[in-house]
Image (cartoon, rainbow, N blue to C red; front, top):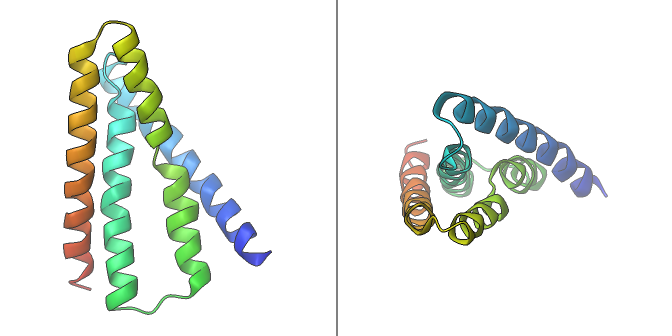
Length: 124
């Protein structure tokens, strides 16, 4: 039961951070392209790379801390369900270029972000 509470609290914090950052980016650059979703996915992938590599290889973290940070905070923060819906909506609306751009940019940037995060995590 303790694990569920840890994940619940982390998920709420991550979702709140996602809402804040996405809103900030949409205010700045508009809503024609899902900048907020893209940014949180890239940052979330970078963060999980750093956290997992540093807690597996350099620092021993308690299972509850890892659950809180990865499944909780980052699970609430990243938004691949939003990514999927927004991409389908763009294609449905005839915005094939933006839909394809969103898929390519999200997938490649997030993979690169995770790899960079792993490399950074190894430095700790």
